[in-house]
Length: 141
Image (cartoon, one colour):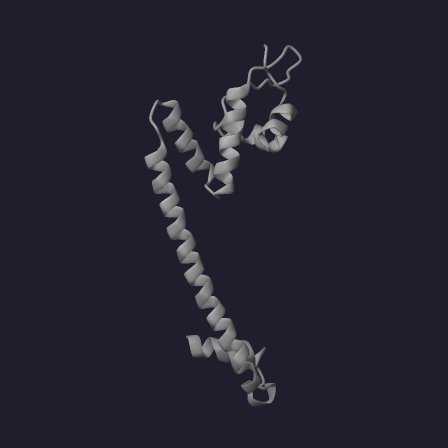
């Protein structure tokens, strides 16, 4: 087959690992590659383009299932851009929630650290493990 590459060559051309190529093929993101008589997988430029797309989508932290859905739309003849916009919007919302959660956690940690000076082991009952954490847990609960 002219213009074909082995898994190592395809991985290098797409900027992914051999293991990633095999995983993407196993998960159906990449079509099963034809094999040589010796059993080597062979990939063409379309496969490389797909691998590059997957790499770029992963760089946006899109899950493999979402990438598979995008590829399925394209293979079915539908332009997937509307679906991609929805996935990106959902990912942005998820990141915004994570940021809010992390800010709340940071505020709690700052308050705990600030109040740590007031919590001395001598002022806690004998069963206290760490008055800094136990005092914060009582304040939050």
